[in-house]
Length: 190
Image 1 (cartoon, rainbow, N blue to C red):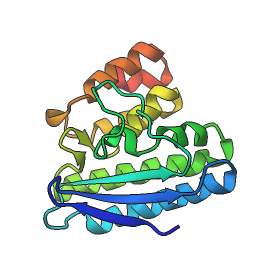
Image 2: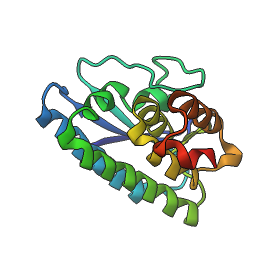
Image 3: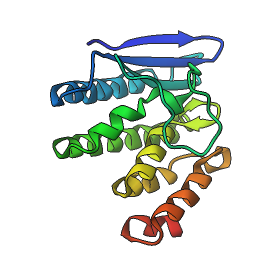
Image 4: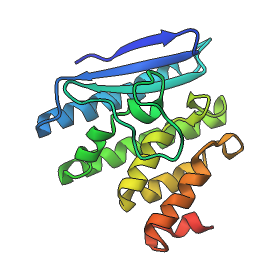
């Protein structure tokens, strides 16, 4: 399904919307991951648009109710602007359990990191809203869900604006609490 975008002038936010009919089989999951990659291309193309301070990818899947991803902050289910619900945690929870999609998921996370790093070098930090840096909600959720994603979260720490962080350092502490000292968390302890 083609991506849709909308601009909320009051919020200065550009939303890239992925609508999916379901996520019941691998074909659905593959299509959503492909659309997510296209959404990242769209964000790259519009990262310097005038009047846009924030960009979010909204994943809407028919039959999947909004839910809060693993986080540490106060978020309201149903808040149409909360990036901690818009990435559709239920989808990612399912996708990471299917081995054939691991490479594709890792490539998407690398792509997000590249976008964040390039944006920081050119325009400054990229945000989803005034409290959430681009990729923060998804990466925090994945790192708290499965320690395989902790190194990806750690890579982002080098590019996120820690002077403007709201939950990143708390997430770091929570990840260390959940997994303790292990290979995946070694760089977080520095």
